[in-house]
Image: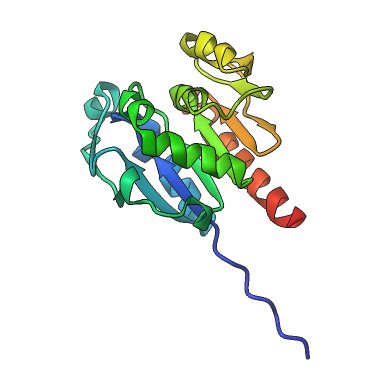
Length: 195
C-alpha cells in the first residue's frame, strides 16, 4: 500500500498596523479574521512594529483589548518560511510603512512568489512596499491615490476581493470577511498546485 502523503500546514504571517480593526478579532455573527484562518488549520503568526497593538476606537467600543503579537517585524527572520503574508485591516499603518524591515519583508515575499494580501486600509502598506504595480487592487477609497501612484489599478472599495496573480486584495472587511479569507486560501492552494 502506498503511504499517504501528509499535508503540510499552511503558514501565514499577519502584519498588524498601529491600531487593529474590529474584524481581526471580533466574531459578532461571523468568524473573526484570525479565527477564519485558524479554521482552515493554518498556523497564523502575528507580527507588527511593536509587540502590543491597541484596537481602533470602533473595536475598543465593542470590547476589543490590546493584542499581544507573536513577533516584531524585526524578529521575523526568513519570510520564505511562510506561504503568505497578509496586512490586516485597521485605520493606522504608519509604523509598518515607516519600518524598513516591514517593507523589506513584503518585497522579499513578493520576489519569492509568496501570496501577499491586504485588507482594506492595509493595502496602502502594499503600495508603500511597491508590490502592487500592474495589479488590480481593491482597497479603501481614501487610498486610491496611493494605490495608483504605486502602479496599482484601483478596482474600488465596495467590491468583492480580487486575486491578481499572487496578490489578493479586499475591503469592507465585515461584509466580505469570509470571501477575503477564502480568496487568500484559493491563491495559496493555486500556488501549491503549481509548485
